[in-house]
Amino acid sequence: MQYFVVMIDYGRRGREAIVDPELTRREVVSRVASGEYTNVSFIHEIAGCSVEDVTDDILSEAGLPEIPLTGAELQANTLDHVRDRRKHEPV
Image (tube, rainbow, N blue to C red; front, side, top):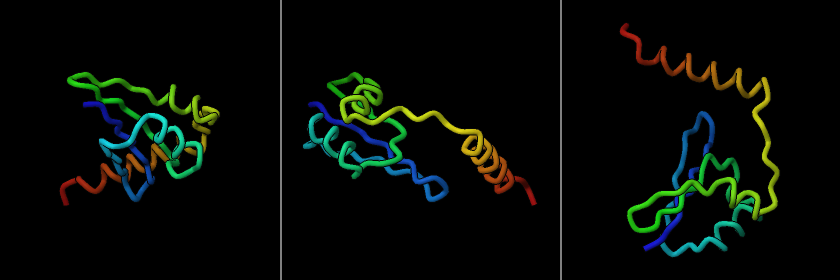
């Protein structure tokens, strides 16, 4: 059995893993290219007992450029991490 796991990152709203055994590689590429899957964190291909990260391959097949994180995004990630750590501090 072979299937794909597409992890979508919604920022502060959380993440969503899309797992559909009926999706083919071509359909995943098509959905990424059409914009149906945006903010993709990673795409894993599960085949039998092995897992392979195919994110870069599928994004390049879909024709999307790889966009590095900017300074503002890195700062936002740090602030989110600090905020999350404060939530778990003893009161």
